[in-house]
Length: 460
Image (cartoon, rainbow, N blue to C red; front, top):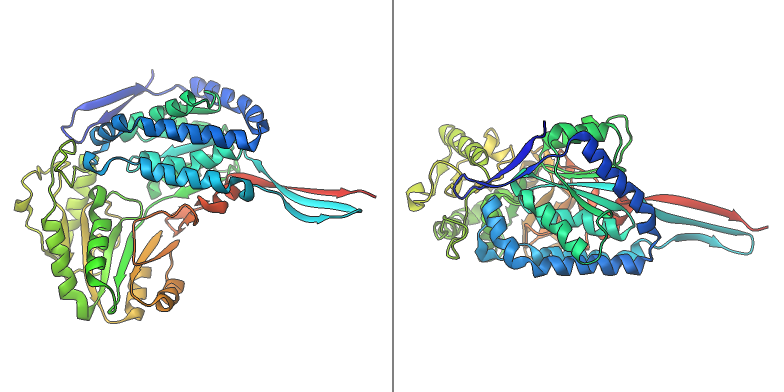
């Protein structure tokens, strides 16, 4: 009997959308069609594939008036922020712009005697398992370059954003990308694991939890299927004594609280030079106290509900544990009348925290941040590295050389100076430790979505 997947809206707990999950044989049949279409798709000229992907992105942009409120209903992001199309377009456009160079042959020799070169070949069928927190931007990181490189793609979205994959694929299909080249799929976990174990896919990209990444690895064990895994994070910010304090507070707190803290590279812990600590905390508290928690369909709302009640419950547990261990919660929840003990959760700033507390170690993925004073770079580096994760780290200083030296000592995928919570499509999006493996975007994104094939041609 087929499983029914349901998206429960965090706005009111109602079922917003439901879809039947495919049975294993149905999923195999769909994957077979997509696999059969791959050779013909990769044989098309690169310029044609690029043009079709650009057209698909443009068609998705035309749907923005529908996708923005749809996202609010599915996962709670306020409509005032206008959705994700800006980031989607920036990333896809950059990957389209660099495709010809990134996929060009590496010529080692072209002489009268030998032609020696390395070409990039598509893997085949790419499965993209996308998360709910930024369902379009995270998906496009792989979808656009995978299609451009000549792969065919199957998109499986999180149940929380059940309609996002369906809508994205429809936009591309309407723009001319064949249905067998880019397809949406609804699967439960068991069928997904079965298909991975059967090596139905030639490359799998997963964005989600560490537990989810481990499940993907276990299911694919022994198949040698290449995997891209972007998993958890506990991204730090460090405010040095020469920082622009106003900019640091405004940007880091936004990085911690935007999207109700549900950002892959959101700021989850902040270390501040002791001489600036009190001033920084005062500014941070003023910013948070000015937020408006409420219905994300209301244009005055700046902070919506968390995507699911269980996500909010975990943040409440981490906060309560920290307070019971000596932390001070600075935000009065009474300021946020919409906090209902469910998905609607008041933002919180914690001080007097330490690394014995889960809120400073475990991924929170919600609107809470701990702030600690530090006495110099050595202590800040030690604390920033005291984590099982390594996605980004944000340094606030006027000294780029010092930022580079500190960055070299941090175990992370990206080092920011005077900014945070941003993905630059020209740079590789990657992580270390339990944040996962692989890399998206930039030329390296193309390298991961293709395999090298060497030609050693002796002419005489």
